[in-house]
Amino acid sequence: MPSPCVTMGSAPTQPKNSDIPEARLSAMVTDCPGSFLLGLTISDIPVKALLDSSATHCFIDSALVSNHHLPITPLPQPMCLHLFDGSYVSENIVYEVTIPVSFAPGKILPVSFLVTPLDPEISAVIGLCWLHQYNPLVDWVNNHIDF
Image (cartoon, rainbow, N blue to C red; front, side, top):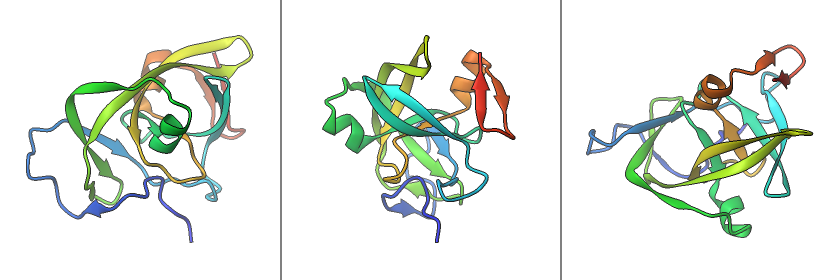
């Protein structure tokens, strides 16, 4: 059975403080034929990333951040994470990582990631904010992006 990208527990309803900004993450998975996977390099670390046009932000796995001592910055305000099924992750997102990411030889772009636990098969999610900012040509049939 496919596993969702986020593995921490989730709550069925919106968090008590609805004034907290919200990030959204879909549930596409690596073993789904519709998943758009990218091979990226983050701080000389090869990672598997999911291109997710349903995700509002970019996300990076908290274990990757911790294991490789990537530089975290506290968010000005915590964010709640809203999942595809309408549930909310029980813990707010409180950190981000802004780091250069190699998308292709010679194409290194800074990306701001929200830090949260992800499925062990996926180290990062590239979301709609990144797609809006860089507007790459996306070949959805061949899982390829071009700039």
